[in-house]
Length: 413
Image 1 (cartoon, rainbow, N blue to C red):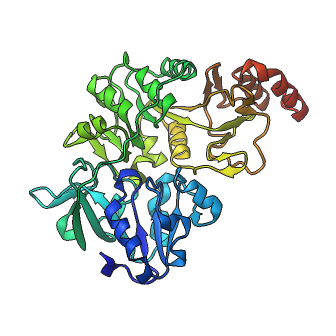
Image 2: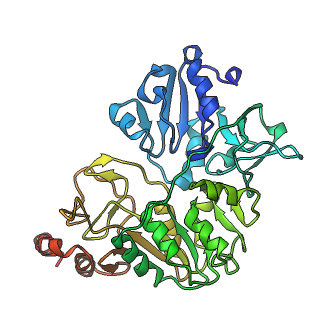
Image 3: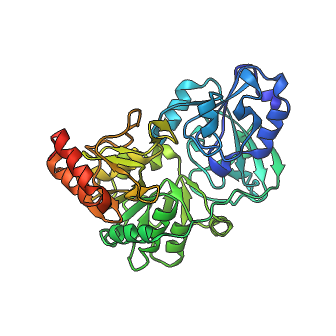
C-alpha cells in the first residue's frame, strides 16, 4: 500500500465503519517516509495521533464533518474543516484532489471477485473506476448491495483484517423525545417516503410509525430504527417512485444486530451520496418526508445545526439537501426537530437571534415545520409576524415572555 502514496498524495477515506483501521495504522507507523500527504474524510470514528498533529505536515487530516474525535483537533488547529453539503462531496473531492488513492474497508471478495463496500457507499462509491483503490477486507464487514460493488481487477491491492465494527446503541427516549415523535408521526401519511437520522428523537419517531403502512425509506443513514420497521413490514417501498421496494441509504451505523440484518439482505441498497442526497432526486418522490435535528432556531426560522454559541461543532451534512428535496416533492414535508431548552430548561433553544458566529445550516426560506415537545410551528409561506408567533408558542413556557419581548423589540410582532 505504501508504494502507492507519493509525496503530496491525497488519500480519500470513507465515513464511519468504512474507515480502514489497519491501513491507517500502517500509514501512521511509517509516517516518517511521508511528505505532504492529506487524508480526506467526512466523519472519523477512531482517534489517532496524526489528528493531533503528531506527524506534522507529513500527514494532515482534512475533515468535512467534525466528530467527537476531530472536534478538539479542529479547535487546536491540527485538522482542517471544509464546509460542504453531503450531496456535493464527490464533486468537491474530484476538484480538490489529484490522482487520489481511496483506502476503504470492505467485505471479503465473493466467488465472482467482487468486494462490497459493506456499510458504506457515501462519496467513495462514486470513485469506483475513477480513482485508485486499496481495500481492507474485514472478515466482519457485512456484504451489502446497491452501487457499492468493486471488482478485484479495479483495485491496486488489498489485504485481510478481522476486527469488530464500531457500534452505536440508540439511547433511551425521554418524555420530550416521545412527545416530539408523536407530533411528527401523526403528520406522516401512509405510503410516504422518509429520511431520518440517528439519535434519541429520530429513533423515537421511527418507533412511533409502527401502525403506518407501505412506507418507503430514502435516507442518508440506515439505523436500527429503520431495520425495525422493515422487519415489521411497515417499510416495504411499494409506493416509491424510485428504487421501488428497496430501502435506500448511503451508509449504515448502529448495533451488531443491524449489521447482521444487512448482510446479504437484498431489501437494502446503498447508493452514492451524490444520488441519495441530491435534492433533484429526492424531489421525484411523492409525499417525501425529511426529518432533521437542529441546535438552535431563531424567530424567523433560521436553523443553526452545526455550531454551538458561535463555535463549530459538526458541519452541514445532508440536512439542507433533504430539506430542499422535500420542499420540491409533491406533498412533501420537512420537519426540523429539537428540544425547546437545554441546561435543565435554563436556556431556550428557540432564540430571538442566532448567536454571533452561528452558522445557518437550513435557510428560513426552506424550513417547513419546526417541532419541539410543546408543538409544531408551521413556517412555510408565512409572514415574519406569523413565524415569530408560531415559534414563541412552541418554546418552553418559562421563556415565552422574554421571547415575545425580544420579538417586539426587533419589530417582528
